Length: 269
Ligand code: SAM
Image (cartoon, rainbow, N blue to C red; front, top):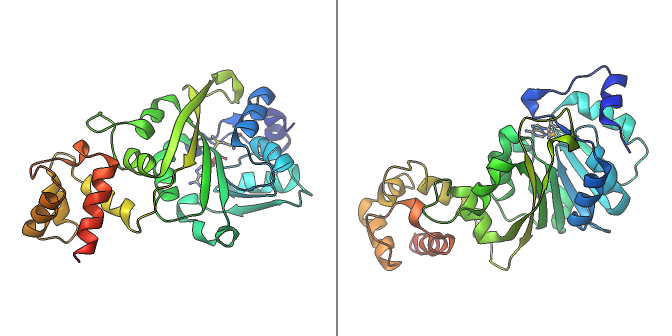
């Protein structure tokens, strides 16, 4: 097993706090996550491999693992710690700029990530912003971020992430990770979540539409729809066709209602 503290010392590096670097360093939990990810003979995308503690476990089971890491220091460390792994490709990139559609020639793949907490929502929205061949996701996030994934209409943290996850995935929180499982230990608690793709068809452009609907949270849906290049009359007409109250706000709509509204709008364009 890769010893995070020792490797940082050997390479004369410190964990970079601003990049969310807390490395999972407890073998029991590394094994638990690899088992939950269920990646036997599968293609895998790992976001933020860091020193490779999770990656090492994934490589034992997966057919192939592609990692995307923003920190050049980590990419250099990985080329030594996981040197010789035939089923690994490390991409040095900000994941927010990474072209997910270029992966695995559209073959189905699994996503695994101990997410950098400062950028959890943008990374997850990127995973949801097009029709990628993702079958499942095993994600570690800060405990406080988990409700954003499972929020229901009118919950305080209900937003585009909750809508897109609910529309495309069946998900649940699997277990909590103690702070002691990391090096260095974070100030916050973490949970591991698991998501499996449901049978809903991906609607091209849907995530951008949902983001526009939430762009001014205090305004009504009609007002936000003006930003989607609709006239007020067209927006009201679409809401009426979907039996949605003309004074509704985005935060009250279910993912199914968003999908119905979106398909109504694009079919009348
Ligand atoms: N997977 C490792 C582990 O569990 O020990 C590291 C997890 S650490 C919480 C998050 C990792 O994501 C760090 O290696 C960090 O450099 C990387 N990272 C941060 N922002 C990123 C971004 N925008 N794109 C890709 N990687 C990023």
